[in-house]
Image 1 (cartoon, helix red, strand yellow):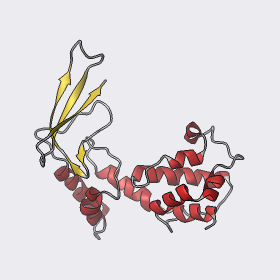
Image 2 (cartoon, helix red, strand yellow; image 1 turned 120 degrees about the horizontal axis):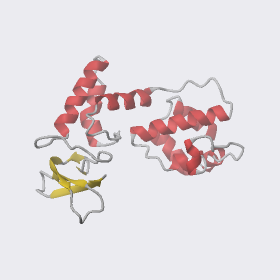
Image 3 (cartoon, helix red, strand yellow; image 1 turned 90 degrees about the vertical axis):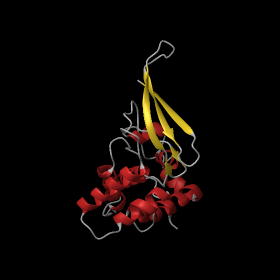
Image 4 (cartoon, helix red, strand yellow; image 1 turned 90 degrees about the horizontal axis):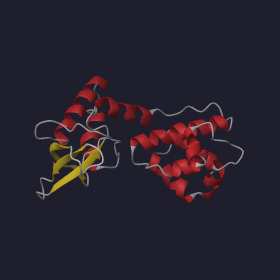
Length: 207
């Protein structure tokens, strides 16, 4: 397939993110096109990675946030190549927005669309013929039922980092503040319980 056609089919929704990812890794002509030396990226966040190929290759095409970033930067690529008249498919954007709007703040995680959590719990709600408001309500309730806590949800110091056992969220027991001369900075330990094995696991975060 023509490498430009691969890009166009992805951004217009004719092929999915996984198919584009496969081409990105296996199609040398696509790599050559994306590394076009005539294009400069210093004026964008892509410049931090060298070029658009280096940016795209480090993304996880199972995760909604990364998929949206890929489409966004490919849209910029098409503009730089002066390719017009392309209608960007909004499916991934809409789904990502729905997840962000529905997710409790203490999670704020990038959803893996290939995970059991999404396929078995979230996707069936999305597929229902109900209003967007009702979808948000049901998805938020589903998140709360999946990511359970003993008394209160975690108050993260840094980015949320809810521990999982594969695709299964662990039970949040609580957090303990770390304020001692032994630590360079104050922080907290977040305590999780694997209800299947009985194992306790922790996460540390510091200010």
